[in-house]
Amino acid sequence: MKKHIYQALVLIGCFISYSAFAGVCEQGDKARIWISPRVVKAGEPIKVMAVSSDHALTELVLTLPNGEKQLLNTTVNDGLPHHLSAQIDTLGEGQYQLEVKDKNETLACREVFNGDNGTKKSSAWNDDYEVFYSAWIEQLFDSPVSENLSFPSLEPVLRNPERNFLHNYLGLKEDKSFPATPDCADFPYFLRSYFAWKNGLPFSFRSCNRGSAKNPPSCTSATIHTDFVNKTASLATFKALSNTLMNGVQSGNGRTGLGSEETDFYPVALKREVLLPGTIYADPYGHVLMLSKWIPQTENSAGILFAVDAQPDNSIARKRFWEGTFLFANVASAGPGFKAFRPITKNNALLKNDKLANYSTEQGNMTPEEFYAQIYRLINPNGLDAKQAYEATLTALVEQLETRVQSVENGEDYFRKGGGTIGMPNGAAIFETVGAWEDFATPSRDMRLLIAINVLQKFPEKMLKFPELFNLTADSAPQVKTQIEELHEKLINEKKIHYVRSNGEPWELTVAEILARKPAFEMSYNPNDCVEVRWGAKADTEEYASCKRHAPPAQLKQMAAVRDWFRDAKRPSR
Image 1 (tube, rainbow, N blue to C red):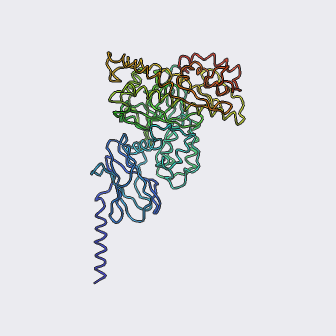
Image 2: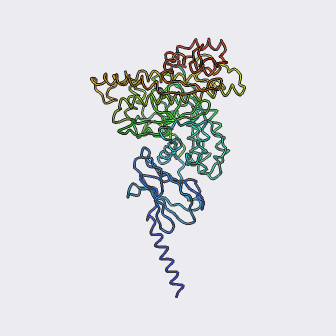
Image 3: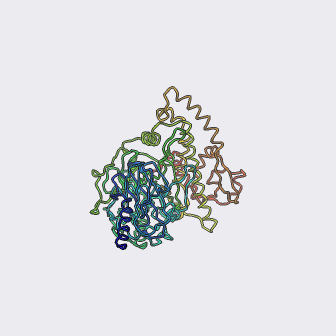
């Protein structure tokens, strides 16, 4: 009799415990919960990320096997996409449930237990994966606004479990030492293929040419790789694909025509809900950036759109949207603008343009002024405060200068380690070549610097041309313009950068000095010149006295022949 009573009590206890769980625990239409690693092991930590494309998320709740509920400490991103992330230090044996909520409404539920959860995975890039990819990119490169975020390569980013939600996701210690050194063109492909590898998704890319002065690049048919699909692919498998990408992808892949269907990327509508982290920006001259985060506008601060990019020396840096970084021009040789990866369907096919919900060629019909005005309206929907907008522009220039400091220093380090004179390519090839010139010369960066200087100097005039962007009228704009000109003169003498001279001593330059040296930056990109020359120092000055290395006369003659490109801040057509 006692045995039967005991068994009944156990059953009642189990029923009470079970009843504490959600009656139906499944992923929702409004949100989805992801966990890492793929296989949960008792006693080991797991990471949780809940993501929604259009719904605010306020809390993550963990239900223990005994029915107890715990509110998890979360990191919240209340933007697009909305996502919450948390870490659970340890899970024991038994069944757990995770719920993500918006206040009292449960938006998604997921069961978690020791071992493979057996969750059926999609083998296609559906909307759930696209939003997850976007949230993953944002977390990879998130950092306080005040921080000048940069890395020597992508390796420390992916090897950091606090940044990389997919770190050791496969449980193979696969992120410990694998190489991750993509350059500008490879960068978005590397991240997209890495995400596909970890999540068992297909991946595609094409071989493209570089186009011509009259036509944008064109591409071959896509090669769709299924080596990762529905399996735990080895590091060697990913490395093999990565090597193929590094050898096959170049700047032409991003500059394809906006109306073409034989492309890896398609142009998207200029809408806030479309321009999510992971969207690329391909400029008309071959540089590629990837959106990483939107900072909303507040009463006291302007909004910011952040992106990240890779350089030929493999360094990674965060940039903010402005004319000095996101170059835009309507040219016959490229289809520039914001673009997204063309998704792969269940039957390993790539969607055509008319099947893509966000496909748009509107960027092709815009002048540069219209393009920039449209994006600024998205970043600051309530209009810009003129002072805040000017200060944001100046900050962006300073960030650009600080990034250049490291690029120039990389060239100096090459010579300190015994490197010899670097050969200089002819003509327009100075912008797109390989080897040491690509790694250490800065023609593209200096072209952008000259454009950025022009943007800052012309900022007061911009208020007269687009007063509505600053909530001004034609009558009030001239007075505010005068105030901004006064602010400009004050701040450019306060903002400073530092570089290290050839003798190892630091040297300080104000932004005012940088602006005064603008003509010198038309001839400052050759790494064979000393660091002082590369920062525009004049001969017979204390700053210049430590300079001991100069570019060969023949190279100086080549540079003088193409100086107009830099003076006019306009790259030549291919």
